[in-house]
Length: 619
Image 1 (cartoon, one colour):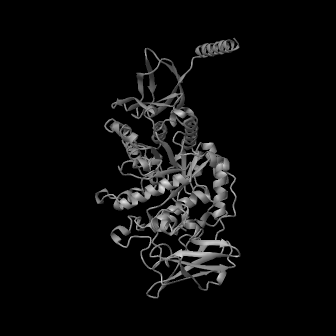
Image 2: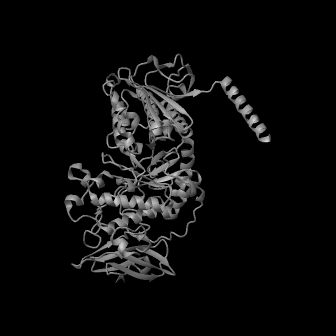
Image 3: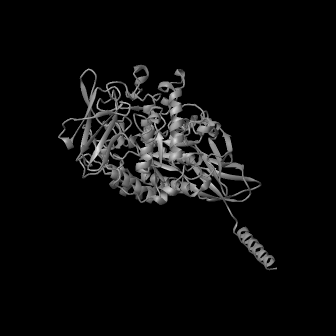
């Protein structure tokens, strides 16, 4: 390993030197613990008796070789501090860990699995000019397994039931909530103890590889939620690893996060190399297509507080890591969960940016949900909550999230957030989702949103699948399915997401009527989206439009979706105006149709031109 690179935070392969490496008929164990007085390896292979490790390199690293070590066996490092006390730690670079509450590392042979997804890997991209419709899931509570005492499916079993669902519903990427090993189910993986260890809740490393492989062969990308900000306080993990604050800040003022966990000290090169190696490891070993990085606000500013100033070391680390990942893993995508106004998050590092591909648009999410909580009688006063996002939108490459954070802790689910009684919520939710998909930016929805889920998400329970027996939910999930597929099939909704010509307000000054009109464009086509959020029918709404006939390709108020269908499915312009009636809480996507007579004339002209061209060539 490049020691200078390790100490200066420049390397992405520390895991290939540190940890447990199988070789010959045994394994080599290495760990980084500068302040330790003595370290021994204990495990199944030596009867849990101590095998002494020796100082190597610059004496900050420890190593020993043990014969007879096999994949699947457990081990720990017994780390003696200078005061004579010792603590048994899991391996910071361990590739596997026991299921909670146990905490031993597990030997894994990562060479065993062979991927069959080369076709996908060769063509994957960051999706800037492609559709990106993400289904965020928590692996343990999407569906539960009645044959398992904890209710969990293995990674491979989950893939087999998840893939047909994703294909049916029109999602082309999944985002998995953190899979690095964690002791508390309630943390959802955001307080990790094993950054290189896929949680054993759902199986082994090879089973996770098989899951990703199957998803790729089904043309579905995989994004992993990753936490580069903080780690769990459990004494057997990273906290005070060698008897000192090795991975965390020694100062409690910045050493503890708002979630009670330990903050990584990003000014240390060793910590940077640890995190960079970890992110690269998930992409290299598991073929993960991208990372959603959690709580980036808390890295940009000290403790996420703008008044405390920019954490320049953490910002520099993000730039180095993101640029290094993009160079090493072509076609990946990196998304930042960042609620600050810090600039150039999605600009390239060489442009002075942080190097992310996408930034979660938390402003859009908050403003939009606040608007739909508002009584329709007062939405005129809140009208520009829905137009404000396009004032700042060109500054970054935004992704629109309706994530797990919006359906827990008393916030209510997306459908429940809609103003009014039960029956009134569904037409508003349908219109909300059409607005979301008409708005520029890639899409993310948490599992259950597509069902019109009413109960807040609970990691201990599966989704309420039986709700589909109720008409409102059955029609709502059918609507989301059709909307998703329409999104995937219409380049107007994604090809020019980040180009000015991709979006135009046709009308955003109907404050009293709560009507909005949007035009989305691609290289070849245009789509018109009309919305009425007033709660009352709006008759004879007129707007400027190109001459021609316009056809509704999706209408939120169709009877198959639980609405009252608009009888008129086509509208023709008159004197450059298109006039429509919009039902209460209605949304419609329109496309200009090509007149059949004109089509024949164009075809005849093309044929005659081709004949003329052939004739001239012959002459």
